[in-house]
Image 1 (cartoon, rainbow, N blue to C red):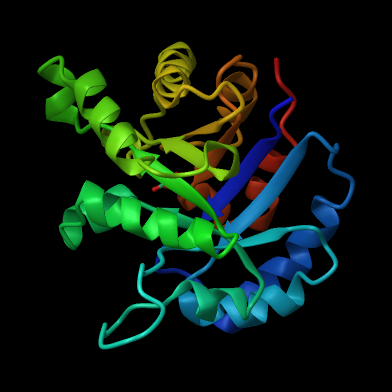
Image 2: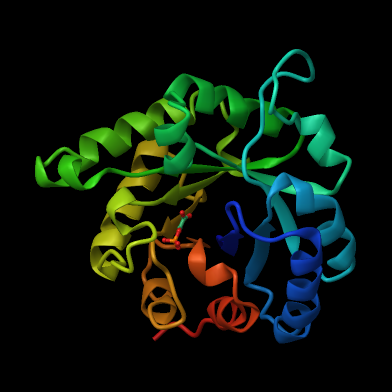
Amino acid sequence: MRKAVIAGNWKMHMTCAEAQAFAESFKPLVAGLPSDREVVLAPPFTAIASLSSSLAGSGIRIAAQNIHWQEKGAFTGMVSAGMLLEHGVSHAIVGHSEPRKYYSETDEQINLRARSAQKHCITPILCVGESDSQREAGEAEKVIRRQVQQGVDGLDHSRLIIAYEPIWAIGTGKTCEAAEANRICGLIRDWVGYSDVVVQYGGSVNPGTIDQLMAQSDIDGVLVGGASLDPEGFARIANYQPV
Ligand code: PGA
């Protein structure tokens, strides 16, 4: 059975002190989670080490928000898998729509990032999703399929998470309808061709939408941005109760 993965992407939020305060409030709220789910937090690189020690022994996992494909070298601003492993990182987000847009990341680069993660036993969380205009033009499935096929090339599908994140739903308060999110997550699983691959939904997930999303047969978890910054709200999301 696929395990649900509830991940929080903090983006460029949280100093070390704020991350530690979050951990102290959050830990007791998720201490009794059922064993069918796992919680992952993705702080900025600078807060990884302190959050990792604050969460030691809690079972909450740490993700990096990106990862470079080289081990080391002249790559200003980048962080490698080995550097992340040193701080207990178990997951890495790759292909998020923000670096795709702001730093022009390509599907080929994203695939290299995911391969490097897997090579070092870090689970990539590969983000895919269409823009508003691509959806309106009827191209959503074509775009997502290309991102999935190029993104997972050469990967071990049993150590991979894919997050379906429609760009128009990110940070807009417009959650994708649960049935439509479920349909796309199912298509993604078919395109990967591995029935146990974990497929998350992301885009304006909040405590009010989580139960319905998690009741869908093809949605195995969520990638949460804004709502993961509040310990009570994110704990409510982790404690979802499918309706
Ligand atoms: P959001 O972000 O929950 O704030 O919409 C999701 C994401 O970017 O992963």
